[in-house]
Length: 330
Image (cartoon, rainbow, N blue to C red; front, side):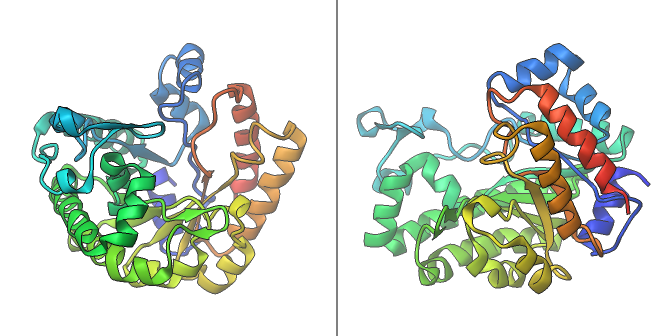
């Protein structure tokens, strides 16, 4: 089987020849450089690991700090330049029709899918996470508490952009819309479930509906413990969820039992407490434990829970993925 076929099996809750797998390494200082030094390119690294999908990013997005009014800008230690909600409601967004923005996605479709037979997942802004790029997390949560209707109007602007973007992605021949929208923290959601339902869900539903209109698979990324929202994630039509983070308290055995016939589990190799934190023998034991929990019956794509962290030797990643490959076979 080729990677695209394995991913299709996983998303349709069937067993292929093996469980598909991937690794998040994009854009991390030191990690990318070591990969390029060792393999020459990420493409060669993907070939060496025999990865089954590719996570592709556009060359741009809706957030364009160059459009921020200079007299309204403040600095956030995490998000850099941020602006108040009043300004964000009207600030120009990046153009979703700009052709050059899609060149990395074209490469993924032409090379990874066309030449290597991998599934192409494309990174897509989720409304809550994307809003942090304009507002910063602290100011965003404050505004969501005090002015939720106006924040919801801003989410609709982000959804407008994402829907136009998804239309172009579908034309290119991508396979999956991967919505990145961190809703969780180590102990649960960052807001009450009622807030998500009333203000975040409607705009998210528009993004999900756009992907489904084109017949694309739909994947969600959210760090933290979002277990309480998994029924709603399924209602929105998501096929899989990443990373279902055990180190934030998610019970993957319960998720597999309760949702494993409807929701594909994408993740499994924790970068917070396992890869880069434990010795290779302990990492291998964790891989075997997780793989044997999520793999039976299909419905699993094995991957790191987030990006391989700076300081993690590539040799440790390669050793881990030797075990992943061994354990992946049905």
